[in-house]
Image 1 (spheres, rainbow, N blue to C red):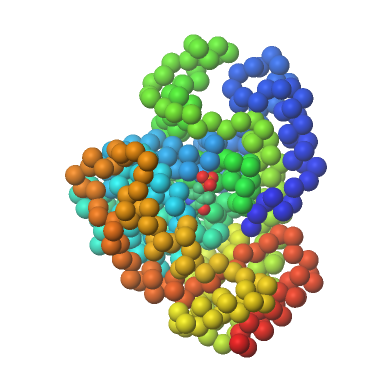
Image 2: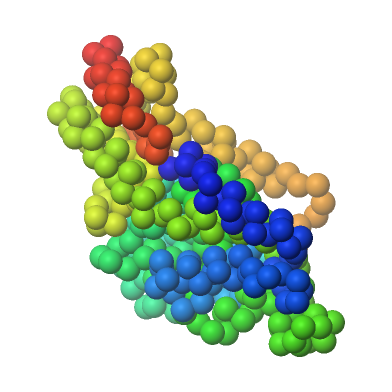
Length: 395
Ligand SMILES: *Cc1c(COP(=O)(O)O)cnc(C)c1O
């Protein structure tokens, strides 16, 4: 999964370009930047890779989510449907734009279940944010059909799934907007960074403005001459971060092919292990292969196997117990703990989060183990890992 495993001369070269000019700012300074526009180049490349018309790079995946929500017109009091299995950033972004997260069930894709969306829809529902978890897709075509039918805005959290696709179409391009993270542990890293993509010119312009204090970027070389059509904030990325990301993005094909090869070797070796079944991936060819996720028949067995794997030094996330990725441990959200009053608390339709229960998600997550697929594994590492996995199933 992590692009940081393959840092090399390419990253150093891109960063050196920036350091040589001393222009760390993505805008302006035309006379002294020696033609280097790393953020802009990254955005072009991201459009090429995903097939999206527009992209905007910002300071984090969380900032990208806030930017996409705002640019799509989601704000105070709007309800946004999200899964209970994701990284906390997804609901943080919703809360931070004043909207209300409404949690819904996942299915065996480990992503939002399109069949259960109807159950949580209300007159305040404005958007659905499926999360393409662990490198692969939700049943995104069905989710899109549902959103279109109900007049809801679809925004994809594809932060963990750069390079993945469904039937040849990049994840992140099904919704009005898609979001990616380029943080330190993602498939491609800027150190810190995130990006939104969209085919909608108005959404793009709003995103571009919002993430830079509302600047319309039409004032020419003098930033002070820009107009400010909307109130924004500062979610800008620096050229240094963009430069690292640009080198990484150029390695995406290599990253994906290595991940797919490594994943396949492990998956094949596990196919006949007793009680193991694999996560449902609607289009296996489009899997970015950052993780191999599998199910055991019961919670007890899953816990035993997770323990055996750890004992045999091939420990894997057991998300059901995880502090950051599963709603069960989100005590801060449940109790609405915060350092100051949130806009969302003024909404008359704010939910009581103290007793969220997602029964079907629990039934799946209790039995799920995910193995992270690394880029740096040698043939021997993979062979050793397979032996350790087989051993773990004997206990
Ligand atoms: C990493 C991640 C984010 C947030 O990205 P940051 O760049 O760390 O802010 C959002 N959603 C998901 C699913 C993620 O994994």
